[in-house]
Length: 238
Image (tube, rainbow, N blue to C red; front, side, top):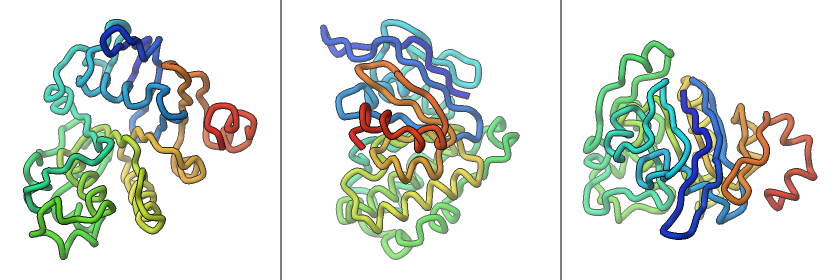
């Protein structure tokens, strides 16, 4: 589904990505792991068209999307839950959810992935139900993250990307987010997730990519990652 090959990207004169490679298959949960400052968020920005790479290619469903503006990438079927959530603070929960809603593309239906509607998002996050008329800036951090995930799902993406999925959230809310992602996996939603919780990620992810200094230095399964304590200590500080 998503293929990132040899991506190079910079902020001004400072190069951050040095040949980034990763793949996410249809119906697969994949991760980007690594210490802070290694290029994970920059990779997401390059995929989403928020930063134009100067080398390599990004393919989505067999079509090149590198160089496209962000709205075209979103229209192609990639939904983003960005770091910091970035919900609309002055819109209600209901308005946040319906503002960017669109129907599922035919290719995703063929995969058997679930079509997301307002009611189904509320079923996934019942804690949002009593807050539907509350403004985004009146929500707790956990509620904002649920809303950010729900808003992305309302675009019915073929691929959902979560950048720092549980950063700064209380333990109980983190558990709810992981449960949500497990449910999405069962629904055959393709997901690329960035987070630091290796124990939680190895329970739901099919494939992991470890990033070091702007390139992937290791790719493997959850079983392989769990079994390699030296790898975790070297690159993840676990």
